[in-house]
Image (cartoon, rainbow, N blue to C red; front, side, top):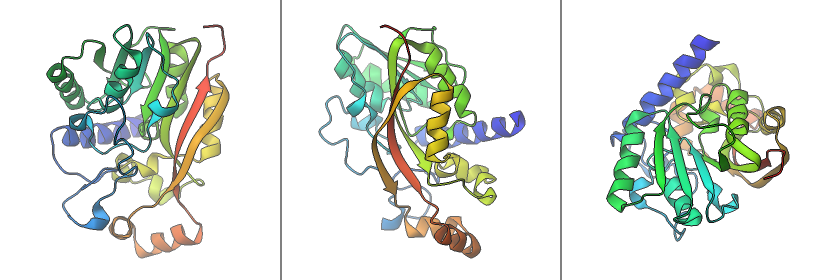
Length: 272
């Protein structure tokens, strides 16, 4: 299992390194891959970030499946952690909310993304943000030092999700909370999906059923878990056609296999 997880992790790292460098690749983002068509314009949230305070276009690589800051309850002076921070999109939105007295830390396992995010921060003159290289299952963050954890379409890519939620629990202060936008599935995905590393790195096959996702959160020690928003993701027909065999497409249709974008909140026990 460890070897498989390492392989999946490296596939994801490679995909996102290519994105950070501006190379097209098959993934959950607009205009992915070599084929340019309207069906290939796979943006899971459209223009949802339009008008969001703190939004920076240069940090938006089209990788989002929600707007976690919308439900995160971030207050001035908070210390916020963004998991899988990419080029810094949600870090820069959150920094506006915490103000000059707060701090937002972005963690990403891809060196190229960290470099891009730091470049964006430097170009904008932001001094209340930090970007650190690290894996979500082994966060480079002190225990009980974070008020709010956010993440956007990243936890589904983590092979060991329970370890990830336990790390979130560890770094949060007592009474702290998280708000995570992520991809979950309607049911257990078939073996032919789980076994495709390239598909895993493309976002969708890393998803677990919604009820299992919520169960893992509770197992990590959180309470007051709530789904703040949920919607079905409609995968473009062209992407489905070139990703699945005819038999697989039939199975997916007959079993109503689909994925959902959810934004989930939960609280760590204790007094702030």
